[in-house]
Length: 438
Image 1 (spheres, rainbow, N blue to C red):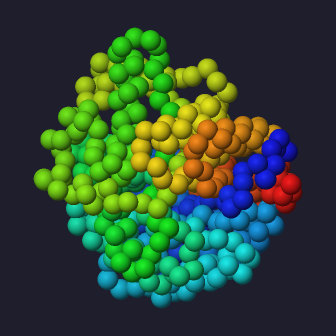
Image 2 (image 1 turned 45 degrees about the horizontal axis):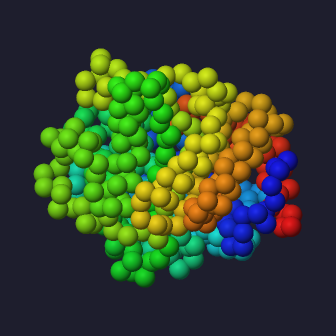
């Protein structure tokens, strides 16, 4: 069980769970189009075990049971993502009414159970036809994404508690276009630099357009990494600062101040879209809240063998999750306070936090992980961070991207052969705290 009470978080603080469409939905026979993750996972060698999201957790058919689990756990909200190719199979043009009907049922189901719908427009499942046109490297994606965002606002906006435009722009751009680990699997500096800009440009354009349609409570979700130098040497300190720029400062600066950090611009400017500076006002469009996904830290060392980004992560000494990520709850507190102190004030949500674990239903390490990170959030809140909510990742075990089904993040165990859901001890820990309001 957790060693804090719900009351310590204050009135109005939102507790929820988070998922992503491609990782859980399945349901690919209703007219849904292909996404880049369909093609990426179908390519041999990209995903462990050759796993795909074809069925995943079959949430498309089992959503009532899943929403019941969220309600019964005492949670206030469900952070879910909509699948762009389910709503607009070609990415632009004709709308798939069956997809609209599915999200109507899902959102109405949340409301019937007293759950607040926190929607995310883009959690990495770009329609494949748009990738054929350059995807996030093509500046036209701002219009494609804005048209999709307006559709969501018009069809569902009156029932949504909030909308996040993009989940983890670093993963959309750097991880997927420079490191090549996620779809579309590119390793190209020009593609990476352009996508790092275009993803924020599209966010700003969509935010502005949704507001014109009456939208409110619009934000964006960043994944944050606490970067620390491997030693006290100036080179290692510079390496940590550079990695912090790639992971954190580029996206924070762009959205919250309308400017990219100068040290990163010096590296990426030759590869950026022409006259990108003219876009910065739109990139910095004010947001109503900022989402923070936090999992771990990186210990960074200088590596002269990598000429563009001369950095490399080192293995740290702390206990690790099944992903190999160090368990470092203090990093969450430090990041929340840093954002609070260094950037324009904006309400904050922890929109993802959790760990992969293979311990089974009695997941004691995960219970401790959540407990320690919730305590870190409370410490930051007491020191002035404007914390509005916390979402555990994830409701249930699911398709973990390039790791396939080998990593389990869920509060609820999923037997992928039978699709049986079984709550774990971590689910019961949240349930115990959330149903006790004292």
